Image 1 (cartoon, helix red, strand yellow):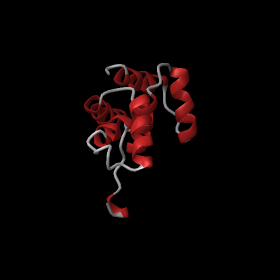
Image 2: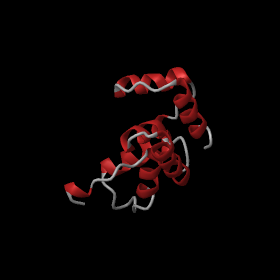
Image 3: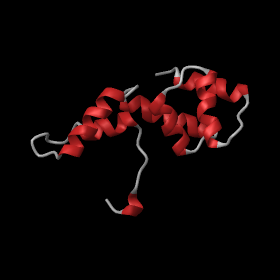
Image 4: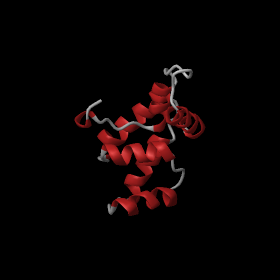
Length: 106
């Protein structure tokens, strides 16, 4: 894959791709990454993709922000504010509640 063809993936999406690799031929990094994505996936790949898309289209988040939230699946307004503070983005409580409602659909 060329540098221009980079694509953002959630942890569950990466896990789905890695599960297709022949473990006999996989290198150590691929094996460790598969182990990590298996342990830390917080949703199924299809659901993660759907949630990510919904966060971008309905909440106005960037792809990067949506992927970050899908990977961590915050459960409260307080947890969510931790992320938005790092984005230097001020979101209303109403927006945060909408985001949480989408994340809870998983």
